[in-house]
Length: 413
Image 1 (cartoon, one colour):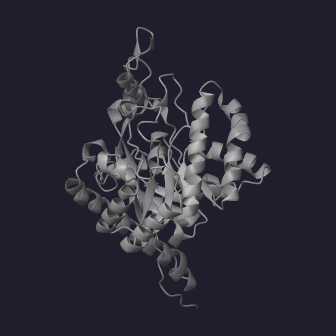
Image 2 (cartoon, rainbow, N blue to C red):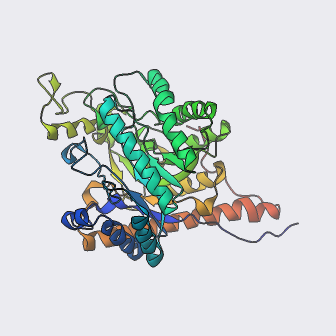
Image 3 (cartoon, one colour):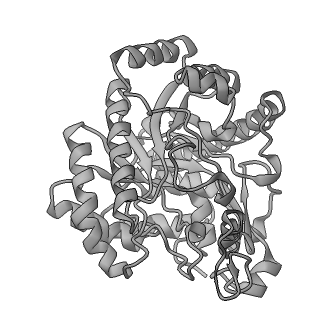
């Protein structure tokens, strides 16, 4: 008999800075861009997190998507209108040191395969500036989307990815960075009937994209920043999704997590199914896309008619919903990650992403206890999973003691 010590491994907990878009008033941050990062780092210290995901975006004066057409908020906490030079980097590094909060990665969420060549070039140029800022800050990765060329089929988009996205990954490789893809299908990006507008929305396409990247020597750059809310949107469960990667020998692909849930509305699902609302959404008027910008937000009814984002800890405990994949089973999510993926657990961040509409208050003092509660929930769930994993997978087997029961199984229905 071998006695193995109990040594649970915890994941660092963080928060995406888009949770509070205007922590620093716009007039102050436009005049002094890095003030927004300093104040967010101080706020993160109050939230008791180990890290932040630093949100970058085209400045509102430069973006092609107006705020009123968005479902979920973006934030240019990292303002890159001006070059992020050595002086700016030193200032932010000093703020990181003073706060004790690390920057896990930088998030820039945009359609990088946009069919408009002019807009695509602008987005690619901005991404390269994000890459350079990551290097200047000593940050290991950038998180974002791939996107989709809406004028092409999905298979044609694989060709487009190879021609135009692989060069971006080559730029990441030259800088020693990972590009971590979040898998949201982004159904509301277009008033067209297309639901999958970010081609990297599911393990099947991750595998196809990784094969392309391997052919071009950038397989190490393509990674996934997994978000379970999108699996719920697609009718998938986390354990089975992770099992697909393990079966393919790709358990290493996931290297970060967004901690955001999704709660399915059974009536909405019964009415429209997982494809969402297909007609009379309000983004079309008299048989054509509405010319009113605000009407474009109605394209998101493809998603919102059947579900709503969850801030971790705000949805009721619902075992039946977990079994039906209609809400995230957070404990099994964290167990499955440890059991099925190839993770360096202590270096894999759990980033709380706040997009629960009813709780998206944009007042600092009002939001503070909401985020603190969600962060505490996330931390304790991870610690419970870590304890179960260490006990069941390490301590008991070393003494040849059986683990009780069966547990949730991949592919089981």
